[in-house]
Length: 152
Image (cartoon, rainbow, N blue to C red; front, side, top):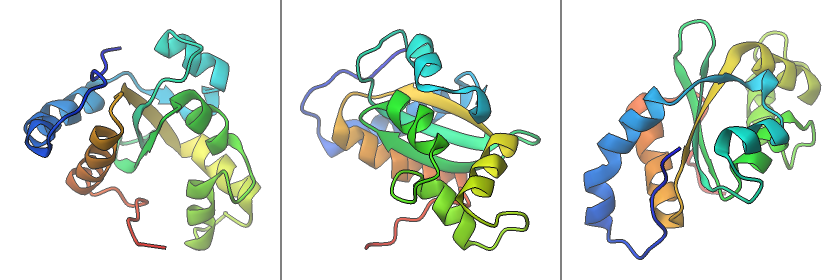
């Protein structure tokens, strides 16, 4: 997988590349969330070291984008945190549970819902500012249902 080099970068440099990166993310290989363990993601990314980047979850049936996330360790975030049932780790699962979606009664059923319904695409991006800006850009452009950028 290609990644963005880690370096100091201006907003204008980021802005110019956002549409290209979105296309790369959308054309990245899809993997069913239920199959993605930390070890499998490390194999996909070709590294046992931390690989930072942005990921997209989409509906398995119609490929509708539902969530964009970012992490300094993609394998940890997707392969461990999104598989967890603790509220502090599984923030998307908690969000789904709070939305009163039929059949989601607790964190465990939220995880099962995600396993049944979501595919994941990944795009390595080294620069943390780039990841942050791209996450918001992608979520807004794709109108993802489950992203929230509300301040805490």
